[in-house]
Length: 151
Length: 235
Image (cartoon, rainbow over all chains, first blue to last red; front, side, top):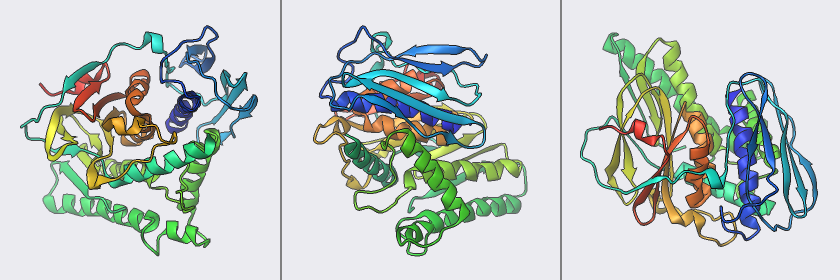
């Protein structure tokens, strides 16, 4: 259940991001007055509208694109993206599982300034270390190729 | 899939029993590697790429990948540029979580399962490091982790080249490491990979997502962290 809702949320953001970048615009640069909305369910069963603000002048065909129904064990997820005037005018969940996950918001204007620091070597003893491997790179490579096909 | 697996268990059982149980988990990883390594001729993935019949479990993984692919209009794609299928990106987080579940079902309450630097952490107050992308012998952050998953996407190990998905722009090369901490390793993995592919903007995806915190390092050695990341930092 969780993984499909998460996957669906990731995909929405990713679609928006990729279409945005492919338009030639800079990430997070301009804000439009016509903000498309993502409808995401909250735990109480009522819906929460989430706002995504971006502007792009992409060359994507106008129309409504509906993802397949992603069914696993806990319910269905289905996403619909509407493109008009070469940009996303609407993103909707058509179906969503009944889940405790709360809404997700990407909004450049509301993004807090994130803390930064210069990295410094640490000398503490630790049980494990998190670092990248070739596998994650291969997946990114595969993902990158998919993005190029989609653009 | 060629990555080192480390398991540590803190428990009150006899060492012999614990070693046996850990060995079951290693056996599980070996079977995953046998089945899903794209590099092994006898693996399910190799069979798939030769057009042969595959197991039910492989079919389930393919369905998961296909659902993701269709839902994202092709943005998630386990097919490599040469046309071969490589589900490693999905399999790793999934396998680590399954491995941890084996130990949970056996009754263990404090342990971790680490495969290639991505880990499912069970129990409280495990000290964990984030690797220095510029010197893999060093750590640059010390964390205190309890009941979570941690994944790092990066470009530095084995000097791999990261494919830029947007035809020539250099976003991906701007950052060298992105660490994501989430409720479990599979969920952290789901977000870490696309967030890393987004370049510097990726940390904003993690910031905007409930339940996830992130620590991103750029090519100049400047780290950017999400607003809730501090709670994981060991003082």
